Image (cartoon, rainbow, N blue to C red; front, top):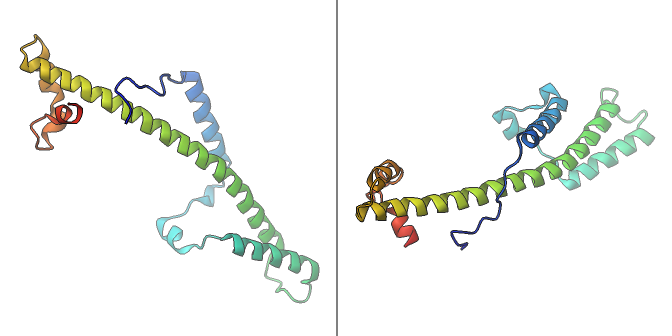
Length: 164
């Protein structure tokens, strides 16, 4: 457990950095085909492709392209199949990159949320102890802050039990 003064990420992005990141994310979104979103029912009913099935699809395409004349039905569109497999590979690569990015974003949010909540609980505890000691202005601050814990049925004293 980290101590109350640990601050692993003590910085903020500039407004320009946030704008650049949002612009970059929006540029990626803008490149995605309009009809590429699925409904929840479609997500449940469409099959994903495993590595083995992707290899099978690639082998089918290769075989059909080299020896499929007169064998493969004319309604099978081989260029469409090739595009599907290529786009699938492209998206797998992009997904890996964006998954790593999303995990980093989630980790940053977890660290900053953890540190912020821990420090805030310490502040709340200080206000509670100061209010009990009769320090000027402490009771009004404590009363304003204790609303967070009152709904939990512990009389607004969670921070004291957590930190003491």
